[in-house]
Image 1 (spheres, rainbow, N blue to C red):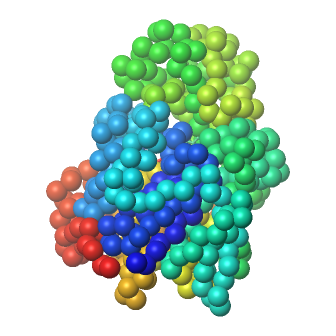
Image 2 (image 1 turned 90 degrees about the vertical axis):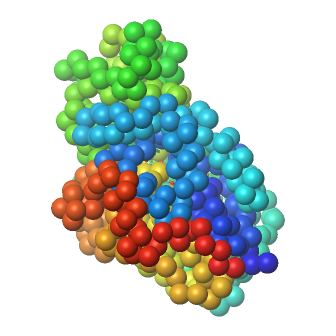
Image 3 (image 1 turned 135 degrees about the vertical axis):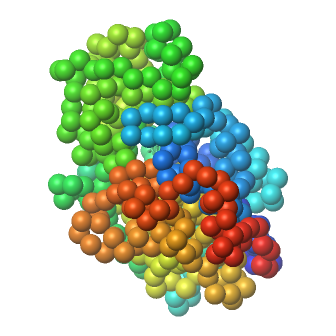
Length: 426
Ligand SMILES: Cc1cc2nc3c(=O)[nH]c(=O)nc-3n(C[C@H](O)[C@H](O)[C@H](O)COP(=O)(O)OP(=O)(O)OC[C@H]3O[C@@H](n4cnc5c(N)ncnc54)[C@H](O)[C@@H]3O)c2cc1C
């Protein structure tokens, strides 16, 4: 049986595993921590703005399992907050266990606490992955979804130190760029001021540490907006965050909270003493990152050069997805690229031409647009997401944005791609 080895079990890796498995490959995921879903354990926002269109496109293409999971675990659906419409918020405290069971039920092998540190090559192909503890994992095709968060050195050099984020590098070891180990130099994203990387754009407060009124409003509405005292407003933070879709004045002038199980605070970090000056936040306490009063994780320093079928340049049997495959922000973006990459792993094993998604689908346009833009200086400073900023505007201009499920399905059908990820290839 042919084997697909997936390095990194975030949304990109899990989605790739599912589509590769459905196409008939044996699949194993190597994940460095003790949990799947990586940053998906601290996110939660789905279906906001163009992500709705992209989610429905993916479902029509056949990547329905992941969206069934996030939809079924949504604490709130169809909510609006500044600059964003019809969002749903999955429960970050529950999603990981459900994903683990889904993969197990599908017969996908998951190797936790298995940190990839190097590759063994034969010519332009990877033969095996070497793990930090000396084990070796052989495969026929490889998919890298190691994201772009860490290693800790990046957070020290380009951020405010290790913020003790969900990836827990001090305990589980640093992220390693597998494409770089295979000889392909990483591309590093930039900030508006030309510096490298970007701060993650939100942190989480323990809901129990907030006043009853704030908590009750948040749990009832899914969103709570509290104006900040003038002395606490810091507009400079808008430029340093990855999430350009949230770089709006409303996010600097107010505390914007979303109920994802925790109280998601839509700012990269916020000094605890200042936060506690606000009514209802007198006892506020961070649950992610633990040092959210001082900083956040640094991302986007490790993108692999790839083509639009997600194959990494100059390595014959390595594909990539998620943040590893472009300056993408978001779960939906990781699922979109991951599902395609996993499907193409199976095509590679069968010697078939890889699939490229057409640019008249939002999913295909995102993949090819981000790939073109990353070659330009300005494009290295931009982040790509269906949820806002430059790419969502493009979706609107190109007529790609719609919330009509039937129109989206028809669009995919017209391309003859309905259920393509459900087809067994091997
Ligand atoms: C605080 C925060 C909040 C966010 N909120 C949202 C949100 O609400 N909605 C949204 O759409 N997006 C959100 N995002 C962005 C989104 O989470 C990410 O863009 C997306 O989930 C990235 O997925 P990924 O699979 O590419 O990478 P990751 O989630 O980073 O996954 C990479 C995985 O690879 C593992 N790994 C790394 N190196 C190795 C190695 N050498 N060997 C084995 N495993 C390895 C990591 O442990 C990790 O599990 C948020 C991000 C952050 C940080």
